[in-house]
Length: 510
Image (cartoon, rainbow, N blue to C red; front, side, top):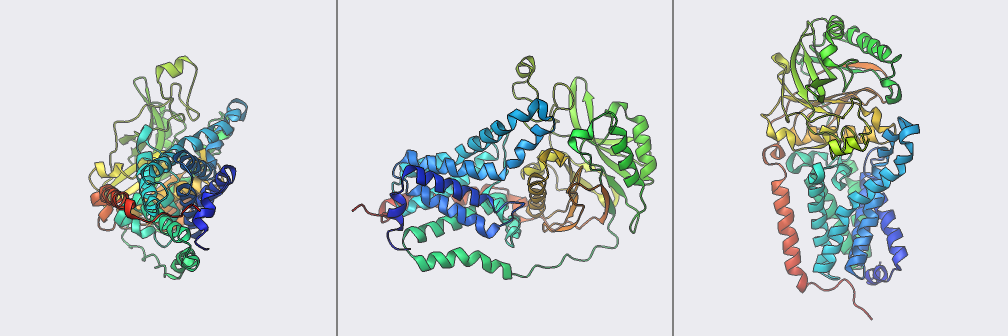
């Protein structure tokens, strides 16, 4: 590509720029599960950066970033329509509007950096670096604003790559900074007209495929065995009165099945797998205890605390008595509850995933399950909570992480696999194993390096026995969180902004 690359992009017609931006954003989403084309995804981000920084005005730059972001989130989060088809007659018509509104709304986090970079540095090479830095900061904000939704971040495209281990040092925001930083470098090379350099950079990620992948260490013969139960209850049948006992009996049979080796010390049922309210579960808990034998059981259930409904993880002793409760504290807005509380209820609005009238109420916050013995302390996460990296740092360091989820809501294409990928990321960030029991899959045992050691396939009933992987020493990210990366990105962005006035323009008119 010659020196005219920047001029050619700057001269694009508006519709062509927006079309290419949409294509670039969609290519960026190919780095995520289930595609896992991590070596392609960053090329999409490079193209989107180049299209935004060569836009003729701040408004055009923002629009290009917004269209690219909308396409990225529409492809990455296509599973968001699935809950609306559980009761299609009632909610199906909402599905396309939900996807459009979510994709367009999340893309606003990208539009603002596009506009701001153009306002601060019109048509300068340093604008590429400023835009990349602002996008990283926008992704940090997306993880906390309006309760946060850190899903489908650019850095998540590296979960399937040999670079996943870097999350132990810099966390998910560090991975995003790496992807967007590399995209900025490639964009600058392309816009400067260095065709050979651009080609070499574009192919560079493929060299990572040659890196050796270490084999999982042999299991500790003394490590306790945990059994994960996957009853495979499709969401449209899960609470049907004639099917509730069928799924409960299936889970009991899986619980009581003979061990593959040593008997399990703990058995884990997925989110909301208890077939009755916890306060009415004495007989059900006795059945679970009888099936589990000497093992303790963690089961996902629902309960009322006064008038407040809770989504709960329950630790049962071998007699079926309740040892400890953990209530989900980060609920899904518009899913498990409706923002607006009483006003929303008065209008007849309810969350799409509400099972109990009025929706769930959040628990008091992150906590630990004190299982004891060789199982030590587990950090429980219920479904959506596993997408947030920050909560585990608010409690004493556990021995492992436990994820109870019902991914039947997420369909069968991308949602369950992206959720599994985020659980892998949580493991690497902390150097702690994650054991996840998922209603319809994918139930898995993940070691502290993010490797899936064993798993049950999607849409299959089964029980998985596995030794608890060892905890690794606390990672750098576990000690520091996101602050070092935030500071580094802020400094780099400020430096690029300060130097930008001296940089040569990407192209000259005439």
